[in-house]
Length: 335
Image (cartoon, rainbow, N blue to C red):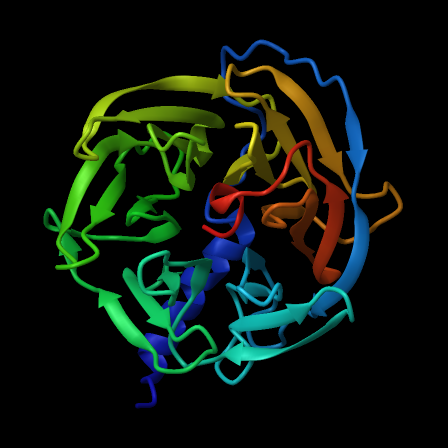
């Protein structure tokens, strides 16, 4: 069904806000009270290919959610793709070729991850507060979750299985109404795991599945939510305060050694920390690359160290590659 012009304008406004903020808001400085952190190593990422150009209809492009499928192809979402353009792309990184995997006239998808239970690709639709899924080869779209959670509609950003979703709720600084929501895979029942957060964005399990790493974009911090035996919240605390200058914390990936790859909106780079909060490295693109403003997410090859980072800006949407500090696992493949 074709959307009405009013609905289209509302979605476009949401998409515009997402692109301008990387699912967050620009600030002039990092969160107050942060001590400078030491980066021991700079890792240079190298360009693989350009995937998108700025869309005339939306005036932007924003790549997100890289995830490898079982064939080794990389799937990438374009948050701001207009109706008729690929909203999910399949990329053969070896041949440096891509083609459309899925498109529709509705979604603004900010992440992608394959479920280990049914093998389908799950997408978070930020604009409509929904979780949708596709067959492994594309097609057969289904709405997995839609509606309110505790009386409020979600703005789902990233996802980690078993069914934990970062619900940003608000993109305004100082507005701590964001949540982490858990959705049951069998009954799609949604419950709030944690509330009172600041624009939750990245979400990933640790290597032992004992807790969740959560990035809070408007506070430039990473929080750790320890889980109990039933998957409920046992405790939570601020784990890392990210010294990012004008940039903000976007998505998170975790490698086999438990290292955290924190994407930075507002800078085409990623900060890497160990689980104790020590900054190990900064992933950067070459200094000569122009018109690229944000690195949103990364996928590390399962069982390997080759990593692929999504980078976007006025120059378009690109894939960059680098060697990760450890091998990729489920926690570094999608979300």
